Image 1 (cartoon, rainbow, N blue to C red):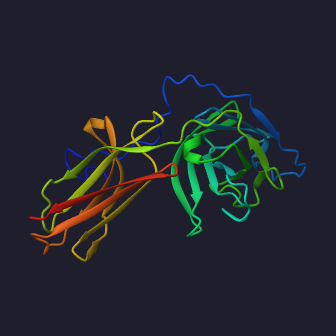
Image 2: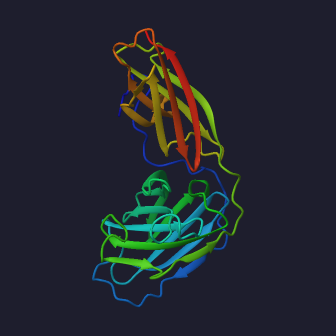
Image 3: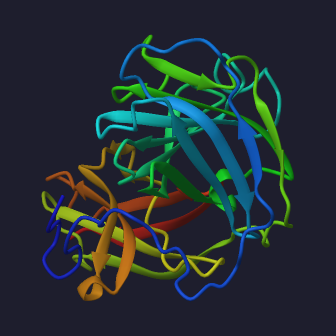
Length: 296
């Protein structure tokens, strides 16, 4: 979706997020959970030896160590399955309502949340993953997870891209889940605020493309919102329009990020009004803004 409109939406948002450069927060005393499963694993399958969990006011940090003769391979994947409300009635079959999925290179980690209505996983954004000395570290903003002072979790490492999706999987613990109690008080709840709005062209034309965008700021010092979901609604009279593109994009020469939607206006809409609403969902919070413009 590069170049939706010259001068406004310049490029796809690069992967990654702001992790608060300059922050000096240190994690509280970590808690180590060891996997005592004696069951042998298939040769070459990743073996979870222990999981060390710690937290700061802003982050929850998982460090997964591997044992056995086979180290984590690039094509392997690791999932941290979190039961944030400690209820078996929500989330997947085991009660997990959040998933952190990382690749075997430690290049990325994505955050997924179970939607209670549709029972499908929704992508919330990305967390920070690194792999060093055979230990995979996943650091995720507490606001993105929405966990309280205590949560349950389990870890699965597997060959392939779907943790727990085949028999060459090690799940720790082998039954049930571990429970972690946060060592620090969470930072203030994340708030989303509207920084500015953009439309292009300013005077929409019948039969042409029209873009509406909003720059949304995080209250935790993370800058502009750059991961999450962008929802687009628009209509001309009683005609509902479907967005041709939606997402997060760089603007202002890469100095800012906006959430944007693009629609094609009907050819016979001259002198009518387009009414649109753009909604950003991020870290369990949402912000909406309405647009209205006369079509020429």
